[in-house]
Length: 373
Image (cartoon, rainbow, N blue to C red):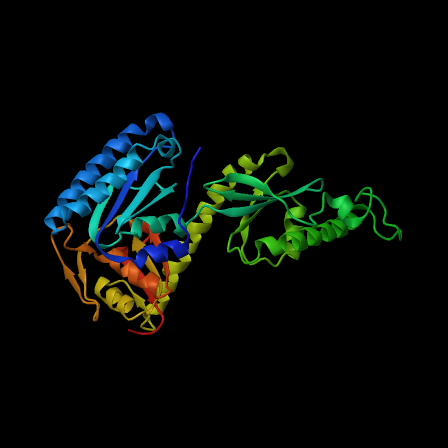
């Protein structure tokens, strides 16, 4: 079982706003299996030793180094903590503060020492959060299941959700003749299923609206087409989990929903790539890193896509956004792409961290700007 504490967009912006001398950011892969935690602890000890050397070389006093070493030593000795992990661990230490996040993404081992925190790898966890609602809908039952990487899957208590189609229309069965005698057979059944679908849609709408989460429908025909015809939820996913959902547990529905989410995210990236290409003709699309850095400095970025893995040591001028590249990756510089992402986040931009093959243009970053820069 994965145990995660994924940062919210607000907490990531708070991390992005930190500007303190001698910030230490550590990422390392972990295992959710408690008996496999020792290699991660050994790796963390190695990372702290390397961080201590970088801090000393950057002029940090012994008290600063000891503060880091003591904080990590306490964490390493916390057996309870190491018994409940996910696939990666992010650790941030600055000015006496120690923050950790357990994330479901597999991240490589990274150490960064600078005057700001290295947050770009953490963005992956909120770019594609693997969270959604699944509506398991049949004539005999309706369930709203929330799927998430940290809590797994569970049935949401929905006030007013009909128990089944018959109770939604106030009849013992939806296959018989209506009280007026006019509706019968397949025609009457479809009308009642439409009434049932509208009742279900009305019940779940207050919960799903405003969540920003996709709604994946698990059902069979004719309910699939009928519910889609009455629902106006804009994030209702096109793919359907087919078959009788009554035969699947929440965990089984979640397992089938995750590949659907992957397809949705792939489609979103494709649409975003097309949009960036279209914005070039308006002077609002950028794939050149220097152009993107200037736009981030001026607060002009609307949407930014960055390569989650690529590190480019250097500096971004505070006023002009001009980039100075560096060959060394040490405490005297920081990742240029990460700094661009940090500035974009703090100006309210949407920032997505993806794998290299998914960055439009094939470079370390791509952007849509709010205006021509």
